[in-house]
Image 1: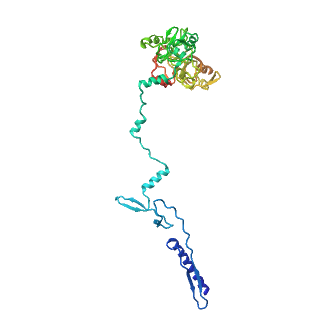
Image 2 (image 1 turned 90 degrees about the vertical axis):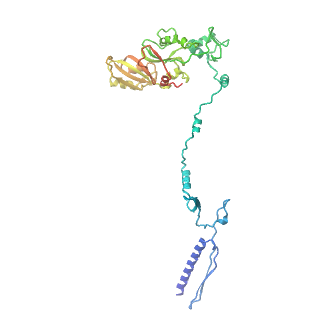
Image 3 (image 1 turned 60 degrees about the vertical axis):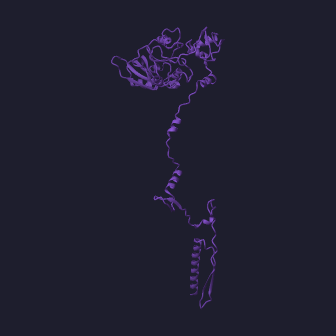
Length: 413
């Protein structure tokens, strides 16, 4: 009986100790507890005494207070951290709440996702970005031209552009000592000159200061004419533009007659579209970005050329497949872009093929048709790039190209 009573007292003391410990933990004012003594008196046994003492709780380290906070003002307990928010309500009065304002929560969410609203530029900013470059005075332009401008153009190119002769013939004239620059004989074709400032004589004749402007003509080449621009060629494509050159002096007084040549070649039996110009040099090997002829005729430009081939006999599917597979020309396998059998015309008994190529190899279309087992009766070029031969342009006639036509040919300058 005494043992059960002793266990009951011990359990009660333990519960009391736990309760006091929890109470002391939740309330910081209770740091130490007095010693408790429990006794049990019984007539049959001596009294039992329990000495119970509690150690003070270990203080938790407090964070360093900020410069504007006082550690004595921190009345919050260790288990609860309350941040008051003072906001202005809809009625205009200030009130205290435990939740942060909705506007702050939205700002935090926007900052975390990194999304920013696009702001429209003002009219002043748009005008500032689209303003034209400043205009320089005449004195500033003259100073730039005299000190920083390109040193000039090669002498042989200037002579050829002035219509003296071909570039190769002009180089021969320079080597022979028939060209003087500023009173001195010049024997180097690579000499840089400026016709507007330098005095140039060729065979005793003064070279004009003004060079002819660029000329671009689209000509419908007839059969039997060659593209060579030699002086001894009687049936040259350039000779078809003689009337244009004869009226040049009347339309452009004081400007030398330009020297024209063809861009690329069409063989003597091929007719159709060909370009005649004085911009660049004929039959280029290298590509010069500033010359129209080089840009138009070089394979890197990838300009497509469309031909209409009239063939002997009937054309079957196997012929079209053979042409589309291509052929080898000068160790290069050439494949056409497209091959199409055109419907027969009522007044033409022969079959017609539309063949589009871009390589520009010599006799490419004729070789493609020949390897397919067909024979060409006539061949005509009708398109270069995006420029088509005008349907109303007669054979042997020409038309001057406008900026839109040049853009269709791929010339952006």
